[in-house]
Image (cartoon, rainbow, N blue to C red; front, side, top):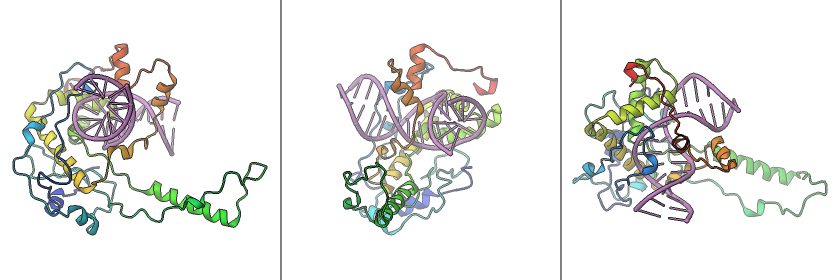
Length: 270
DNA sequence: AAGCCTTTGAAGGTC
DNA sequence: GACCTTCAAAGGCTT
């Protein structure tokens, strides 16, 4: 799927090279060791390798990069191939590689609704049912249209982290080797393989992820991961909230009850 | 049809 | 600073 859309971030970065150190956006700091994200299967987690990646020679960038975005919207009309691979091999790090294609920037949010458009709550027929007058219907249609536009707004996704980039590349291989299709099982295998990688091998993906984040920051300066919070409705969360014991995330749940969901692996899938 | 499962890492929030 | 939560991908499975 991801092979159909090959988006060259090389070209993109040629147009929008990363800013020099004192740019608008600070360089991402090496992430703290997060106990919460320790693997449940007891494999010691390698510390992130950003220390090795602090480039002493950052590529200079135009100061007006955000304005360039405004005047030169990205040329990626199709969002279906949001992420793409530039080549099948990760053996050699390309100078710049983009794993995600960038949806058109959302500029100008349209005409905002006027507060006066909200009918006074007191003006309600005694029946409790509000009969819409022609004027009200027009307002309702306007509101619907606005909501529709909101829904159609392309979501700016989070940039992929190192492991996600690794998964994207290796998934097909694991599927072929193990004749599995279920993503949950495949991801377990990929998680094991990820930990089996050497630091150097992982470093390639950490570096790619770092570039992805950098590019993402340049393309969407005001974007926050928080923007996408709540867009996925979760049943489990509601379940957990209903429960008094509040076991929390599935990870915590398993840890708490000592569950081991590792299945029996075939040889190549270890 | 929508959400879950499963993984790691990043980021935002709370205390 | 420690800890928690959410979301990135993916596709079969469940509700």
